[in-house]
Image 1: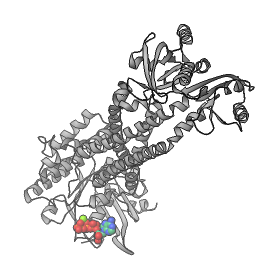
Image 2: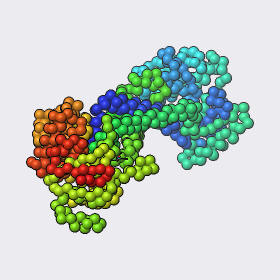
Image 3: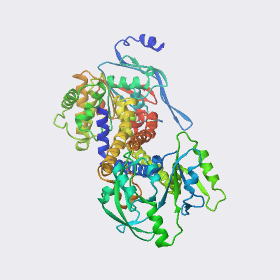
Image 4: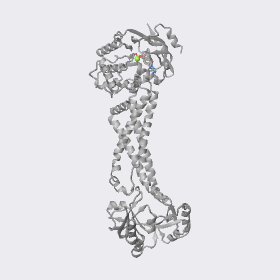
Amino acid sequence: MELASLAFRTLRRHPLRSLLTALGIAVALTAFVLIRTIIGAWYSGVEASVKDRLIVRNAVSLVFYLPQSYQAQIEQIPGVELVGHGNWFGGKFRDEEMRFQQFAVDEHYVDIYSEYQTSPQERESWDKNRKGLLVGQSIADTYGVKPGDNLRLTGTIFPGDWDFEVSGVFKAQESGKDTRIMYFHYDYLNERNKAELGRQPDQVGFYVVRLKAGANVAEIAKAIDEKFANSFAETLTETETAFIQGFVSMSSGIIAALNAVSVVVVLIMLLVLSNTTLMSFRERYREFSVLNALGFSQRHLSLLVVGEAAVLSSAGFVLLLIALTPVFLLPAKSYLGELVNFFPVFRVSMSTLAFAVALAIGAALIAAFPPLLALRRMKVTDGLRLIH
Amino acid sequence: MNSATDTATSPAAHSALIVADRISKSYMRGTERLQVLDALSIQIEEGEFVALMGPSGSGKTTLLNLIAGFDTADAGSLIVAGSNLSSLSENELSKWRLNHVGFVFQFYNLLPVLSAQENVALPLMLFGMSAKERNERARFSLEVVGLGDRVKHLPSELSGGQEQRVAIARAIVTDPKLIVADEPTGDLDRASAEEVLALLKRLNTEFKKTIVMVTHDPAAASHASRIVRLDKGKLVG
Ligand SMILES: Nc1ncnc2c1ncn2[C@@H]1O[C@H](COP(=O)(O)OP(=O)(O)OP(=O)(O)O)[C@@H](O)[C@H]1O
Ligand SMILES: [Mg+2]
């Protein structure tokens, strides 16, 4: 409608100011969206976790081991269906560190993580091969690894070169899930530990426990911990969700800071927009009263004020979308670089975008508020009386 | 109210365009009340060209603002073009102004971002007219004031006299019966002032506009058909 074109005209009078305001809004919105997305990526592990899967670890700390003999004992607890175990390997691949997770596991472990799917043939070939390796789809894609390939990891916790043969590639059932994971046989690790490294044998990092349907999660967790109470390796049993949340909350300080930054960023956006709308209104007080004198009603003028703020914040939103195009179009690695290891699932969610739209609209309305109040108090004669 | 019956006792009431009956207006200055218009009564017939004169501070602008519906009186009744202005709401008053009054002030009050034609067409936006029709009417108005060749110019590209004529074109574009002008030549040189006055005169005679013009300048007042003098909020002479 015509009022909109009038709003446009007015904004064009101070092109630099309008542009800077729109840019300010765009920067704030972009920062907000990216921070939200980072936090979302951070928590994606929590979301993907299964609440009725238990993780049993050493009560003292994750870096202490548990005896392998616990496996059979946990299996006896009523409500427990299957128990697997895993050891964090933490090796380097092609001299690069921490590109993906590597676990030495037993077959139960792979069964329990049924959300990762391997073809029956590949699974069978892994079961049979002592040096067999199962790799996640993302690793296979990134490094061009395929079944039959030989692959060498350099141990950091377990020194030496570790040679494997890729038996199969697994996919995640849901597309959002991280598959930057490798599994190999615990027996391989355990044997070399005994033979070459002189480490204490038969120690596992943690157990994963699959419960029977309808089992009482809390009670079983308690039963497990009670079973090993007062032993030399006491356990701490948590749901997988709680376990991962523990990891995430280790960095909760960072998350809290990021959350605070995202709020500050939104406030800055509000200030920038309010400043422009109020400044623009003050400068044109006289113009508004002339329009009022001509017969434009308070309602028309209010629309004009809100329209100006809306044009600015929409322009900001369009700039946001332009800024985000690489995130939409390119693979995460190309703009995150090394950081991609920390945020395997980096995707701007629709809800975050919807939130940004709501923010842009909200900011326009809030920024229009002070001039609207001034407008209510305006009298035609005030403006006509002012002298340039 | 009974003010309507009061004015009906006046013989000219049926045809007068403006009927002010004992209107008062005061302003608060600090804690002090300043009585600007004091029970002032006046009638202006349709087709008149009235010059409002008087010393500075006598209340000329205040009266003109009341007549134009820019402000409302504290007391008394003011009927303009058939409407009792004090009974209208803020929005009704806006609409009434749109339909019945055009104004021209000492400072031309054009929107700097709009061309002459767009400035003139501005009030027509509120009539829901097509852009084409608005532009045609605006162009016609500009031709009436002798600026048919300046339609695309911005106010900053026009002289003071030309800006004032654009303001006049804007005042007549909605074809109102009444035009109010507050010192329309106050900021102009003699020649430009003469052009503007001749134009107002022509609007009065040729287009039958009723004009109420505040002026300090006797030469300007001489174009009017009647001179009304104001002193300390009352009519004199
Ligand atoms: N909004 C206002 N608030 C307070 N006082 C006002 C206001 N408007 C006008 N006045 C006062 O009312 C008196 C009359 O003002 P008005 O503008 O009507 O005078 P005027 O006759 O037009 O004078 P001039 O010839 O100088 O324009 C002046 O003393 C002025 O200071
Ligand atoms: Mg005055």
